[in-house]
Each structure stands twice: as C-alpha cells, then as structure tokens.
Length: 136
Picture: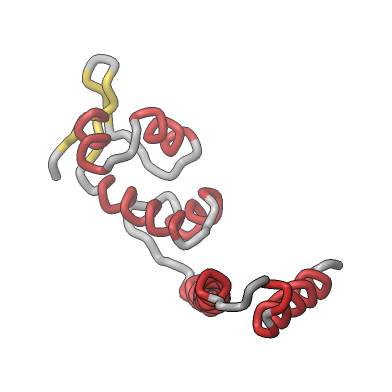
C-alpha cells in the first residue's frame, strides 16, 4: 500500500484539501500519519473518495454516506437504500423527460400566443395539479 500526501490525494481525486480535512473530521476518511504538517493517506483513500462522490451524485448526504461506508477499511453498502435511491432517480428521470418534452413543445409551438395553445394549457393545468397535490 502506497502512502500519498494530502496534496497528491487532492490532485488525483479532484477533492480540495479543505474538503479532505473535513471528510477526515467527520470520519469519512482517515489519515495514516503525518509527514511534518502534511497528512498522509493510504492510496485506498481514493476508492473511498470515489464512493463518496458517487453517493453525493446519487443525492445521499455525507452523514448517510458515512453510515453506509462505516469506519472500517472495507464497505458493506446498504442494498435496500441503494435500490430505493435508484427508484427515486428513475422517477426523477421520468419527470425530467416530461419537462423536456414540455419545454420543447413550448419553444416550438406555432400558436400565435401560448395561452391559445391547448397543449400548453393542459401542461399548465397539470403543473398546477401536481403543485397543489404535493402540499401537505
């Protein structure tokens, strides 16, 4: 196992040193030692940083990521949570596809005024219905 200083980890991972220090503070990663004032990390920290980045992209909080990764060297990801998040992402993709089609229709609509376009009016009604049903 190769030891990397904080600058090398930052360069290779794209994560700022300040974020690396914060991740260490909250227990997501651990420095093996110090060389002078510089933190030294095992090169396996790059795998953990990749998992953290993937988790953040998927919408997990750092706290949720920390629970899933645990403090041990390895990781045992909660498959049920991952499936649930994948379902949420899939639902969001469907919503974004509908939004994309709506935006394209509005941009390409040949009606002289959008208020006269029946498709656009249906989209507005649907948006209003979704907004009102989402409120508690």
